[in-house]
Length: 555
Image 1 (cartoon, rainbow, N blue to C red):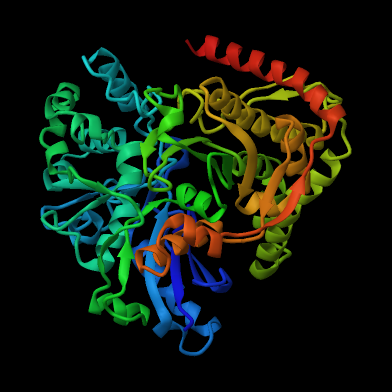
Image 2 (cartoon, rainbow, N blue to C red):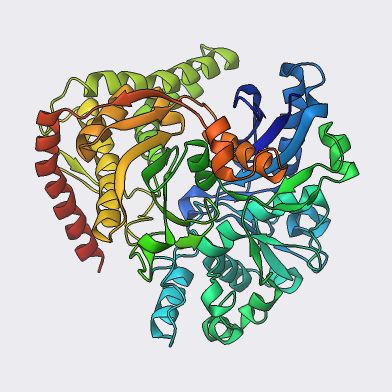
């Protein structure tokens, strides 16, 4: 009998729903729903590195996305769904009250950005992250040793501390904080109340400083030493965490009706998008899965025997079972990848967009259509022209730190730089240097893993960029000097969530078994060009030299 698993993937700009046949892995139907308020630019201030999302975007989005599936799926498909699982961006926490209600859902906080989800790329908490790192280094036990040794402003505690310091009203109302990937399963199972709420292993281990060796979270004294506003918060977090092959609970009648799904089907514990995406990409020891989107997240796994007592420096954590139960999940990534290209596109298009916006000779619909056409074609044309430029020909070197550096060695205070510009530098020259910079940043991550003894034998990429640009992918293959496999699935993160949903439902006995049946095949492989790879070995040294200079100047 046919059965389906439902994977729900919350990205930076939209929620995606994917219906997958649990036996064949066929992607039966998919929908994508943009966040209404986020896409209107509400509650965020990019100039302040503030990026907030309203919980209603998430709640309304999931209803629209799942209901949209039934317009595409075979008749009766909804009745055959056996399990649901979520992945989200992260760290993306929200303050909740003593009843477990997200503060922004309460009338008095409905328009307060501090009461909303603090999106992963919000960097308002740089100072707090630095203080957490310093406190951990000074403590008898370094509570960051399993999180790469450096706390990031993109993570849970820094964000909570910043908001609690900044907003007394939120501070008084906030009983606890909850990660987005844990909140959605709790909502659908009616377990948002603190007495019922349970947390997934992925977010807790990678971003919230949870580790079994110290019995959960660092002690309350560690946090009150940072600031009394954190007093008691660690004790209000669930001490036990669960891997994503386990069920939070059954789907409630209320949400079954909203989503047209069978009541009582299991809802799995959530995880971050890249972690579940790597499962959809068939991750295993020796395979690095790179999720390429606005930013990147690099995921691999290792056996307990291979990791042993090693603490990998400068990454985003090593967590037992955060990716596949029974293996240690390892995370790294870049704070900007596609975002760097989008920044350049917007930079060079500003005059045209402004002229069109102020035009008196064109109607609004025509202006909007022209602006969109220019935006859609800019990176395509830049890529075509840049692909005709030989490595090193322009003499330009760039850094990829336009949104700070996530790994190796997190530092969100860093900024990008470009050197080697001349009067002969054209837009395609600069664009090629930016693409090379993102590839160099990824190479630094690969080299850090290898230098720390983590095997990286092959690279698999997923995400929009891997399908949109042959030029970007070939540069990456040349810079990394290794083959790159691109997955066939357009929705690898949602596919990974569906794989977990099928496991939670008991259709497959393990995540590995579900992967064999459902994981995406490879659709294309990029092979490195030996001549270009040799040149990039030289150019990579220029990237490192420029990076060292920028870091030195900041200090």
